Length: 283
Image 1: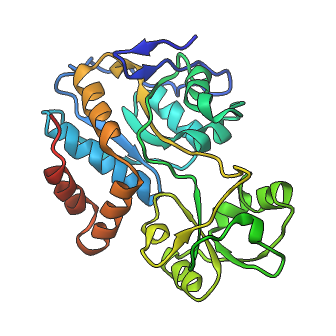
Image 2: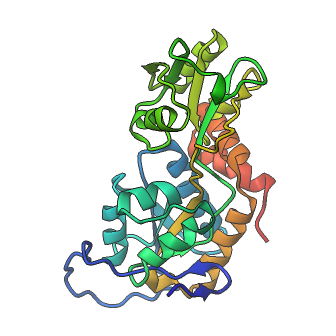
């Protein structure tokens, strides 16, 4: 049932489990002057993406603000439907898991998500940012096939709960390495340099450090988690909003997000995003 909107959208759905909260009637505001509300979760990559949307749209005379939202995608969808938010950067695989969407084929992941949200919110085409797990080691030519029960592996807590995390290694590679949960990415990187295998999400700068090398996944266990945008349906034909997000999605990749996050550690996210946009101006 999905349709393409302005070459960018994949149509999205009405789910019985989610309903927009009842709101009081207010005078209609012109969409040309209404400030956009851009959602950001607790994930650092989400905050960078929200700031990118905010500043890029402001540069096209569409000002707005970043709004803190919970990490639950069902709540995000409900708030978009209730006209409490306008757009939220999201990750397709994670969103599909949260919404219990049957999306087994990576090639149809985004369209499956769009179909599951048809009539609720619009799902914009993905960028090249992918939050898929990145396994790294201190030396080259290491594969997940090389892992044993004696292998020391450091990972974030979310990895242990992911289908392609600890359970995936046991099911696909028949291995249960010694796992230490380390929340801080910098500490994880230090342990990788000391000989452990490390797990980072694809947007964490430490996973791209020059001192580490990617670990091979010959059985293709790791699930792709491409970045998309969830858009309030009332903006589904807003040419400016669609064009700005389309341009950003055409430029952004993991290297860009990791670079902004690295710079943000020194100057803050807004300033780091301003610098990036100055070096990568939109048309």
